[in-house]
Image 1 (cartoon, rainbow, N blue to C red):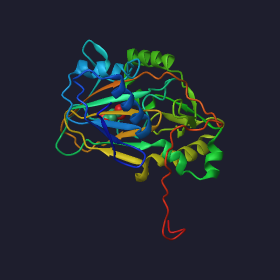
Image 2 (image 1 turned 90 degrees about the horizontal axis):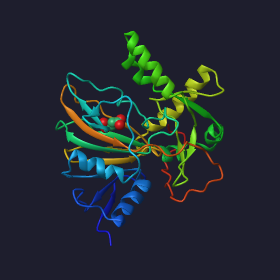
Image 3 (image 1 turned 90 degrees about the vertical axis):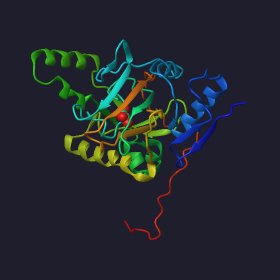
Length: 302
Ligand code: SIN
């Protein structure tokens, strides 16, 4: 019998997992409970975990093959470890934009496991937004309109890293060859829960196929805004030893950039995507995403 307790924060997103010490071996039973909670609540977190970097990496391996991030500083001798360390000399690079990780890959990141090493007393929270609830919150007319659309993705915000020299431009061309802009359906079917998910994000989506630039920009803006709806969000206050895991296929995230010039230091391990995003209009979800009824007392008030 698993002794772990799953304590949800919001109706559809965010749950704390209590009763687990990640310095100890994890039983299959506990792993299955964590995995189910992750699929159901999209983001789960653990408090006060005194694990080392190597234990963080080993724990992450249970979720799949580790991903090497092409644009983030890596741990010494540990390419699968990404160091997110921001302070006066190294301000944030583009984590303060709503996004799902690495959707410019043909198979975007599956899960991300982020651990807090050091954080200012105030600030530096992360927000996640439930893209399944966001889909459910759209009107039927808009859902029908976007159901067959595809959007092109690019590592656009990281292009600034390759400015200046001929050698940098050369490196940029290599990156472009490695990540030729994939197109993903605007609505995807989650490959495990079969839920429908709104899958465009401000950081990496560039345009909708088959539309003029102007049309695409306006449609995308309306869809991007869904991540900013507070009713779909979960916000985590970090402490050293907090670890969060999110399902990148179901949610977007935003690291709040309100602590400069103080130090915020995180270590991150991600799980390589194992499927090309697809949309199956016949699929029936096996986990219910309760719809959030943003009902107003007076119709037409807003
Ligand atoms: C990220 O965008 O993956 C980083 C999130 C964070 O630092 O809170």
